[in-house]
Image 1 (cartoon, rainbow, N blue to C red):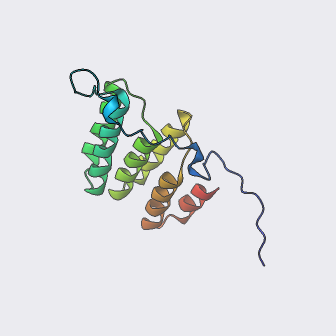
Image 2: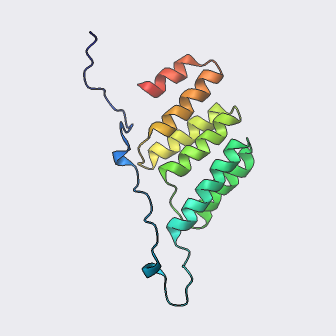
Image 3: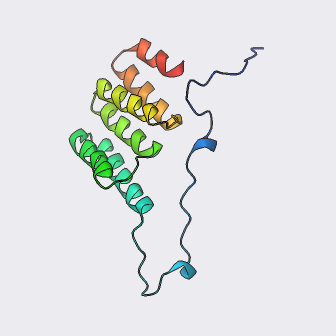
Length: 139
């Protein structure tokens, strides 16, 4: 039997407990007078994050970066999910320098990594054969 002790986190989240809660679904009672929903900052953040993720899956790095920068232009604070999508865009485009820079910036802002971020980084480092980089994600 192999016994494992506690793992030191180095700023990584071991669970989704640190993740932001899912947005609450709107019920008919939430409809404001006039029937239209007001676009909130969280809605716009979610929209741009989905856009970044879409560009990442299409390997459209420049568009993903533009959408990420648009978050800042609009005064929104990027979430862990937005950074994860940006990191994935860099990884899918083979730009591990950019992925590492985005990860570093995410950590500098005080956000903690999650499994999506770690998996994207691991995938990228393994694709380019950088096992030392992959190991650094696990430290």
